[in-house]
Length: 477
Ligand SMILES: [Fe+2]
Image 1 (cartoon, rainbow, N blue to C red):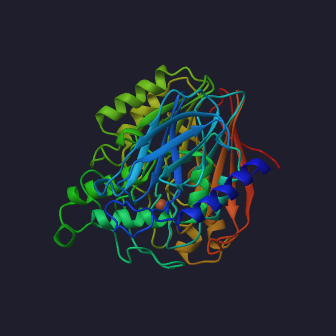
Image 2 (image 1 turned 90 degrees about the vertical axis):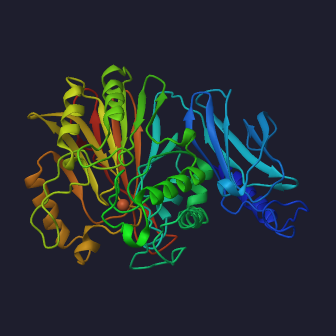
Image 3 (image 1 turned 45 degrees about the horizontal axis):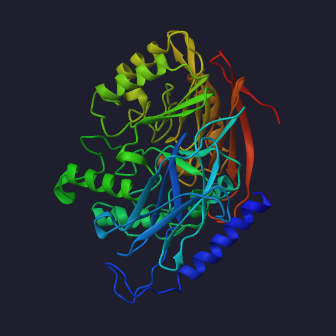
């Protein structure tokens, strides 16, 4: 982090501290004596060339003023306005700021009376000669701390791409820190509480205050291995209709996440260098399709007509085939990922034709992979998979020490899946992607200890795909 940025955050912290002690005489659904506070930080998301979505949460019925500036001291304010919130939306605030210049940092803050929020920094879409993204998935509050988000907060990034499991609906062991609510989320109030808890984390707040986030969901934003028709862990007899639960989870997600238009299947453009297509692999999923007909048509149309140098796809679950070696407690394949939907996968991969610069950016599987996506005997795309921030990896699932039992499993996986050029099953962390005209490079950054909020985070592996190859190769240190 630069000195300038560090000052911004220190300043924001001081303001946030002051905010917690200031009381306004007019408050909304809170009692008149309840202080107005920006307890959950600020966030931004979904950057377009001229627009970015701003987010915060504050309990008040008073007007909420917002400002966007070109400098961290707010001397050059370029946009300002006033908005309101209410209990109907859990007191969350979203502002879609338009009319900004592309590819520029902006600073933003909210104000209720004399109480000022922390300052956030964001960036509109665009590009120079390179693009840099953070990658994250599978942030299980119960199972650990989010040092990986803290690491991303300090990087120079255009945005953070979040591939899902931003929250987990359940309560998990080992419970490094207690979840709120202390039971599985089922109701709207449950999901709101879980989102609220995640946004009290200092690393989560730092990441959101530093970069716009482009997020899609996976299953645990609602329930394990969820689809439009249910979840294997949802019991209608005791938990009510699935549709009611899914609507509650969805409402809480859109209240609490900086996502535009209550929609996660959407696309972004970063100059001619890259497009980013984000998929929704849960809302339209049935027993026979992972995409649904409308999203499939839209995705294929985008991938075949887009003339961006690189076509990045934010893909919550693995698209490369994964034959699982025989291991106690493991099935031979995972039908929750694209392997369970071969017809959809065939249509998408066939549509790529001779185009070779499609790069799937994937989460979900709590491990690190670099793959050449095979189709009819050749590679038609590449896939880089980010590991989990904290959710159990294979060593933890197998209950063996790291870099012991899973090392053999990695070798077996690569024998059975020769398109998987790199597999690492044990480490937690985050990823970064650097996009230039010549290559897309992916770095995995691992946390030393998921139980330590101040864990070291260090770069462990790097792979890249070069222009027009659909192949991956290791980048030596
Ligand atoms: Fe996960």
